Length: 100
Image (tube, rainbow, N blue to C red; front, side, top):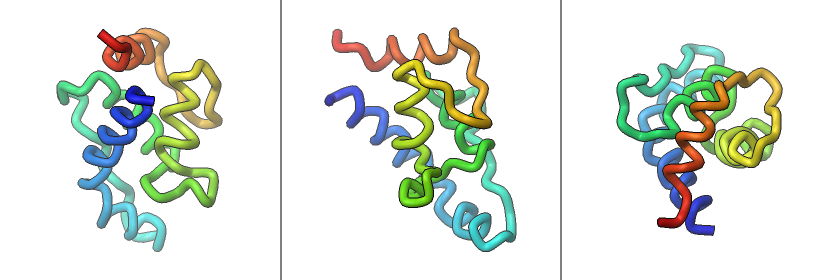
């Protein structure tokens, strides 16, 4: 449960920068910009891949929730349509959220 809360916290914080662009994207105006790859968070590459595939904060009711429909399934080993993440990036994120 702590892992899911940590992942959701990261997604919420990292997605906060997307709030306005996401609203515009939904209205067909502009695409969100991914989190810079240089970020220190080990799950940023997964979050970026999900964002590029159209998943976003608050999109769960449409099957496009970044956490519920993309990040968590990927970390559970499931394939997510339209999202490609190297296994190494998934492992890094999983390791970062394992209890110490």
